[in-house]
Length: 200
Ligand code: HEC
Image (cartoon, rainbow, N blue to C red; front, top):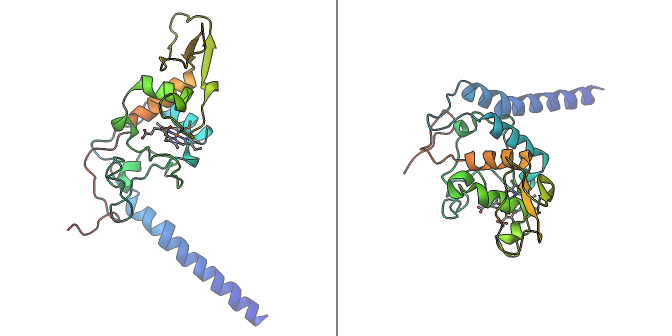
């Protein structure tokens, strides 16, 4: 019995230490952080689009955490400077992601600001990038005989619009694209406690 108690006690202490070092202490250090001046809060359309992003599992192929040049050549890939804690001020939950089957999207709004491009690319990625393995999201759109008033018609490259029809973006697609074009963290990094590192 004595040994079991020791084992259990040891496990509890280890867990408590790990939780405070990895969760409690970082939370205390970062909780009062101010948002960077260059970071805008999400609009309501962007927040809805964020939910569409989560619901459709974009995170399973796209990260939102450009890395330091020491870890990966993300700056050379055009994905932007390494992100810091303050960049995620309005992100609850954060969408860091780990998989990079597709490019990092933390600065996609700066890299690709065209709403038309994003709508068309979501409708059919292969219309823009030959051989793309990104899934198409046709259910975010409606294929109609003709556009009604107020419809957002998607302009696709030649040959991708079904003959005699128009492709119209549903609200989910418009919200998702509002979110994507709003992803721009190209302002200078704000150093907060915990992200400070020696600069050479
Ligand atoms: C199965 C993996 C996969 C999933 C899921 C996925 N993508 Fe992609 N995505 C890719 C790949 C691969 C590329 C690069 C080829 C291309 O542009 O089509 C890409 C490219 C992109 C680009 C262009 C990036 C650039 O730098 O040009 C955007 C924007 C994008 N995806 C958004 C999304 C959104 C939004 C979702 C969810 C609705 C999503 N992706 C889901 C794999 C994926």
